Image (cartoon, rainbow, N blue to C red; front, side, top):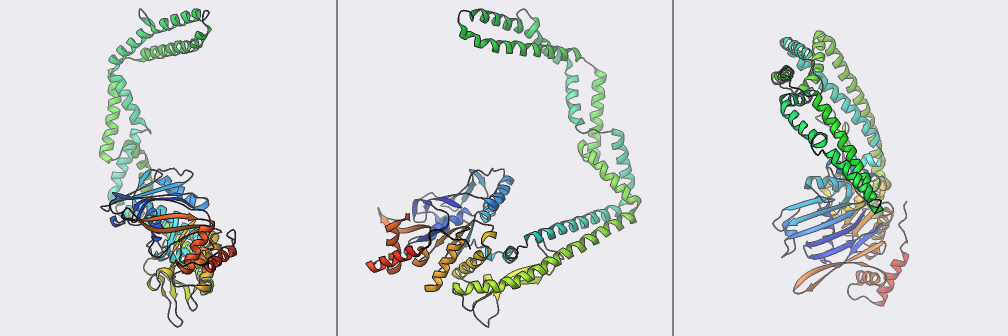
Amino acid sequence: MLERLSISGLALVDRAQVEFGPGLNVVTGETGAGKSLLVQSVNLLVGEKADGSQVREGAKAAVVEGEFRLEGGPARRAAELLAEWGIELEESVIVRREVQAEGRSRASVNQSPVSQASLKKLGEILADLHGQHEHQSLLRPDAGLEVLDGLGALEGERTRYQEALAAWRGAVSDLERLEQSLATHAERREQMLEAAREIDAARIVEGEEEQLRLEAGRLAHADRLRELVGEALERLSEGDRPALETITGAAHAIDQAATLDPSLAETLPLLEEARIAAGEAARALADYAARLESDPQALEAVEARRELLARLARKYRREPRELIRWREELRRDLSAGEDAEGALAKARAEVTHTEEACRKVGGKLTRLRRKAAEDWSDRLTRELKPLGFRHARLEFAVEEAEGERFLQDGLDRVEIRFTANPGEPARPLHRVVSGGELSRIMLALKTALETQDRVDVLVFDEVDSGIGGAVAQTVGQRLRRLAGHRQIVCVTHLPMIAALATHHLRVTKHVAGGRTLVRIEPLESEARVDELARMLAGERATSTTRRQARELLDAAPLEPSPR
């Protein structure tokens, strides 16, 4: 959930710190007070485009920072995505977005810089916004398919299709590679045989190049190495005052001194460790020096071997380690060439087999989608009626895909269609709905999905646009019920919705020092009664409207109740 939101220099907000809680969070305030700035802030955090006009007049930049605490599926998906970017998922995800007055913006996640495109990917996991803003998941091209598969619990069947699709694509790729290889096999055969013979004769060993480089260095500098190692040995154990003798003498002196001051005994183990380490180093260097000798013939052999590997690498344009793997490819190509017809027949049979399997799994997925589309179109249409859509119809159109044989997610395309008027045909959703209508449609879908949804934070703006009375009460109840499974942030102007909140924020606008400022504050007890009374009657709140406000609060359930 979204726990904290910090805003500075954004439009009319100089500086604000907002805390959200679980359940239903409502944002209220007079028209024009700046309620949409909270939604705008979350928009920036989920990767939407930034604009220099959003920066407060006189400020160098607008900065928004949000802290999200994730659990379950969203936490796993976020961890996988952050791991791709080299970012570790800690107890929470802290997203920071800075917008410069000249229009440039930058973003960071857990203090690591990310691009806007990356932030947008993460934003799809963190929050879903619904209203007049761009971040509306229902309007994405894949929304119909994602929503229908979620409602029908078809993700597993879709994964099986994608596995079958991957197998078919792999078989097609193998066949194409084989056909290309066989088309030029005759003219390439002698070249492949020569390359195979040369690689076999070279008997290349994995990691050999580095070992040869080190060995060549030792042999080429044997005299200088002998001189330096001899100098080190002399200082350690063979000179006039060798280090070993000095350390031993120091240990003897401290041993005697410890009889006078026992605290000095603490240094004796350190001196003993130094004596042992110096002795081991001296023995290792002596062994090295004994093995070290100038051997021009050995050096010549090593350099010849290195030149052979370098020549093969230049000739075949592959590093020595790559030549080992290429030899296996040559073996397969030569073997296929000896039985071209058999190899082609086998590859073509695999394409046919995987294509039939893909079509079979895809056909089953299509049938399940059409059944789910029929069931859920009727169910969601019924769900919409109490939300102010008396004659509306929402439906999923599952149609055979044109063009490609197999799509990534099935054999068909799914589109959400909607009509608000009887007798009118349903049209693509994004063409026929307003921001407020879209919010209520999303509310119906989210309520239907409830525990299956992939996002924990839902932000609704304009969900109560153009409604009131019983419809508004129903919208509030849906929001409250949904808040039993998700954190909801809802900008509203209706008191019957605001009264159902578990956390209430008020946005006010005032003038100080000749500048307009927006203040965002949490409301409790009497302050909340005052705000609901204002929403009921405007600035002329009376004892009657205050009583009505208390009645609304008293009627609200203490906790969101999951269905």
